Length: 302
Ligand SMILES: O=c1[nH]c(=O)c2[nH]c(=O)[nH]c2[nH]1
Picture 1 (tube, rainbow, N blue to C red):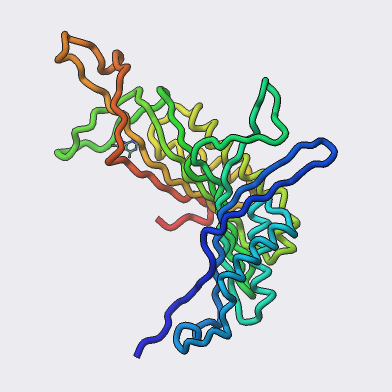
Picture 2: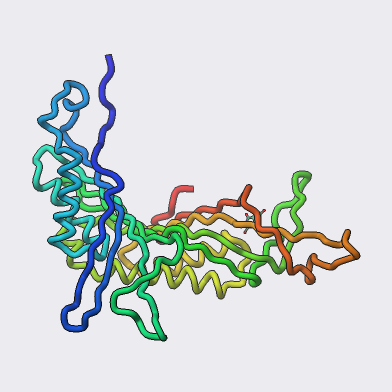
């Protein structure tokens, strides 16, 4: 005899585009998102007894996403996710939690002849702003915000030396190397009591996102990096200072290696050390460095 240990269901990959038209200026602003909503609650019988009476159809969930996008602001995504998740928990008495995942794609306003264009945009790479909102009846709203796929490279200003050396070590120490990564950074907000509380803080979400992105880029560029570990910790520390309602900041950074190519075999061509100009970018394997940084007194479990 078996029993259902956990269950959630909903609609994934709901693609939504919303335009805002400023009638006075003629300037239009667009938002494109991919949304996932999964519900939890007293839905066990739909799995164990073929009882569909407890099922809010995933098609209805998709419709609700469109209607909510029409009737409410879709930015910041933390607020939109809270409005959407709260709807399901309040509307259906047997639904006790809603998990909303939003991927916001970047559309940047086009510059034409040096001027921002009123209604044309470009997509700069695969970077997205991701938001997870968990609305749980009787508990509140947990929000995690993130930057994903922000690819960066610096051609100097990065070192890596003093690491443990033993019979497994071949890596040479370096005082000047290329550093490149695809930034995944996320920050967990302290729990909000409910939608009303999220609304009172709504201006903090875009501010934290802008701060986190700027801190990531500025620290990456300006830090004379001793290692990925040391640089990412500085980034996380600065984000915690900039956003008081954030409890933890997490980074996950691949180390996208660029190897020197020894060309001395060809007519004594010098292309290593201070003479290195041509490098071979590596796809794999890659280092992967992660950390979660909390506030002192709330030490993250290691
Ligand atoms: O910044 C780095 N951290 C490491 O842990 C590591 N390991 C390695 O081989 N290269 C690097 N670089």
